[in-house]
Length: 113
Length: 111
Image 1: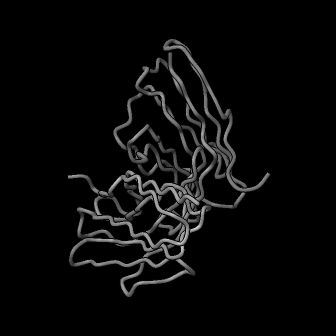
Image 2: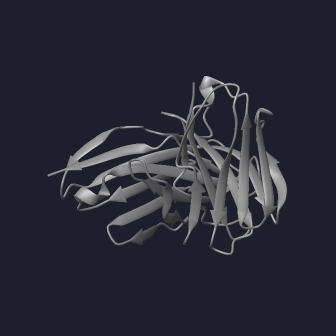
């Protein structure tokens, strides 16, 4: 595997379900990010981990819970989501938090019924 | 006011045309500037950084005007493969290191 991978690529879940999104980066980077991309809206930064410590949490509802067990892996745990949470969730990584370039994974297309 | 504002388009141009995209940002403390490209149903990828002196990469030219808080991207001799959404991205300002994305400008190049 190369670059940034995400699983699953597509997810449909009910409002009462609990699911997790997984991201893995194979680039040796030390910063990882979760973004939300909704239709006709800019990418919204959700969480940032630098050296496995959370450095940003952009007022994201508690029904989204990130986890970064090591510098290569990032999870987004989901529970009791709302239909408006349906979006493309993108993971990214970079070498250093203050980096010029972030490398994105292909994203998970989430639909909440 | 949006932190990063772009004309969403869409821009529909014939092959070979020259097309320019504009972007404005609200925070004068912003430090770094980029253009990313996002193909349909794909992830964003860095196209080029934007420097105060202006910079060129093949058919692509980026300009930055810090006084006006304005960024531009010029594409010359458009190719069909240039069809994508172009994202204006600003780093720093309200949150050190954070990338703030514009909504994106859709470009379609037709034969």
